[in-house]
Image (cartoon, rainbow, N blue to C red; front, side, top):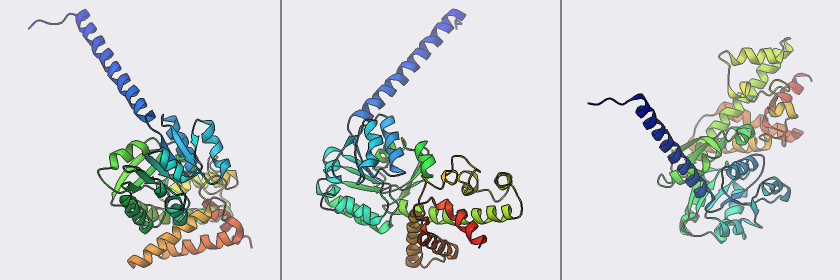
Length: 334
């Protein structure tokens, strides 16, 4: 068999590289065109929803947005999002809609209210709810969507505001396996992990369990940091030791509750701009409801719920949930 000369071999390699580049470029262009072909609706532009919507815009998806607070819309509007006057108008203008709302009542209102999504939703619309709510409410919304010829999927998130800004969220998805690829296409622009958990409501179930553990670990981290500092340890040194030892967790390493330990954590910004204590209290309430319904023992989850409820009563409701450290510190100083 004849051997290829060096020049001929080099030429063939160049042709292969050129073809590979051309295919990749064509795929990129067609993906961008696909992203831009029809708008996505986005309802709920709070601390989490706002950066999520921005990442959709950056990925080439045109957006139609709505929030009850006009000031929440300004930033995404400046980036090119169209503004709707109600959830109903969003549903008129988009056949893929993401909702990111604080609680079950907010979700019910956005979907079933007089100017809600279901009042105008089109057949074939894909509805993705990234709120953290009662799994039973997700199932209720899914049944109502089915009657309208639409599909509802629950897809709560984990990772906090930092991950939302970096498009590094984890999505826990419950709903139709057949519809999951379409959901994954949208959510992967906002997160690095998109996991199908099972039927409608299972995404919420996974999120409730995760947040109960997160609340418990944050309290534990706050107690350990406070104790160490009262024993004379430097907080940054203590955090470093914990994060290279068996006590390491997300609350200590990524979201440390002591001001100044991690510059990007809400603790270093007067506990502003993160996940509010009132919202964590709501999620712990959902966990306790689920615990009662399934007869599951959650003693630490119950204590965490009590502590966060007290924090809300003492004015911590709007501060990030890592302010549990500040609450512990203040009680230690009494």
